Length: 422
Ligand code: DWN
Image (cartoon, rainbow, N blue to C red):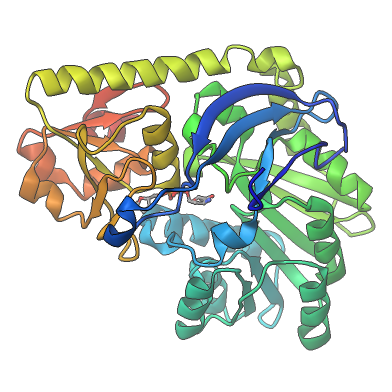
């Protein structure tokens, strides 16, 4: 077994050891391990990508944990590239402002704060803000943009340090990180230390309900150790004398949950939203392995439909390119064994990704100006979760007769009008 990984021997929430595998996507390179031209010839590391289910607490999780230092110390993903996401950050800040009446000097902490785009919204409201992110490149970028950011992984020592220096935090936010963490007990212990008595801890992550319902299997990659449901998280927080008092559904990233957690003895009382979502999870049969039985068949159908579409297009001398060099896109490309002989390039607006190659498929990543320059017949939206935004940026491509192709929840060509009307 490679020294980069460790086997998951028990459920990370309830320690149950009899876990059931329901998906195997094979050995796959790390989804954000983009490659320079010089490294194209070097052998790429791949790791098993399998999902296992805990029949006791219903958490889905990967069967291995890749050393987080390998994945997150230098990170090519910038949250603020997407306008949709920056608008989403405004929504989170407004909810905090209006619902939890935070005062100007209250401390707001964002764990895995990336380039600081969420904290910018709180800083605009004159709150004290602090980011924590393990990626040296992102912490440097956020600090250079005036968002104080500690370059570290979150743990209880960091929580203690911040408490000493800045006092308790009124709001602690963790968007798209809770599912990335192996030791959730240690992570939560840190939250308990730093969170003000009546403070709120907000987690946002793709909801496993949408992943299964819409066959969003591309959301499965080594950064995402857990595929979250509200039910197992309730168990985790109860163990830490904390409670989930509100749960929202939000469309970001293919459909996410936003859950609000507080100390048990805080002033916040649980509302009906928590039970409403756990009922949805139960009705989707996600508290039973039966609910996952046909998932891999649906994944296979997407793979066969996409590869057939590509083969038929090639036979008709049609060209295909892609937009959005996303982590999810690399899971899709690698599982479907799609290479640069099928998809000519992947356009992306992230400077750190351009002039690199996608891991596994080795498809060149270029700036999005290449879309109208090369005018492929089809544009595969690997970041289908941002389809509206990507289409708004490529109106000329569509006007020139180009067609959009989306892979999830089913493989189909789609127009911007259909997307806007959806
Ligand atoms: O959890 C995670 C999610 C939130 O973000 C991380 N583990 C990694 C990352 O996953 P992803 O790469 O699949 O996320 P996105 O946000 O779907 O990736 C979008 C990609 O598309 C990025 O590379 C940026 C690019 N993009 C672009 O070039 N122009 C996106 C938009 C909206 C654009 O206009």
